[in-house]
Image (cartoon, rainbow, N blue to C red; front, side):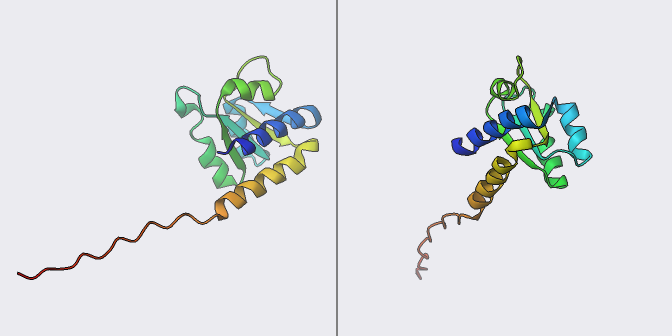
Length: 130
C-alpha cells in the first residue's frame, strides 16, 4: 500500500472520529461488516497473531466494504483518538470524511487499473538436429 493512501486513511479516521462515528476492536468491526454498517474498515498489519485480523479483508470483500491495512496498531489507535493501540476500526458514519473515503476508493481503483509490466519474451530455442 502506498504511503499516500495510508496517510489518507489516517486522515479519514481522524476526521470521522471528530465528525462521525468510529468503532474499535476486531469483534465489533466483524459484526459491523456482517451487518452491512461499516463504510471503511482499517486493520493493523503488525497484529500478533495475524489470525486475529486476517478474516477482515476477506469478509469485507464479500460484503463490498472498503478494507485497508495500515502498518501499525499504535498509529491506528492514535488516529482513532485512543490512548492505546487497536487492531482494527470501522467507520460507520463518515461525517466530513465522506469525500476522503471516496478519494481513497478512487486512488485504489486507479492503482488497480495500471497495467502490469509484461514479462520479457524469451527467444525460442532452436532445435538442433544431429
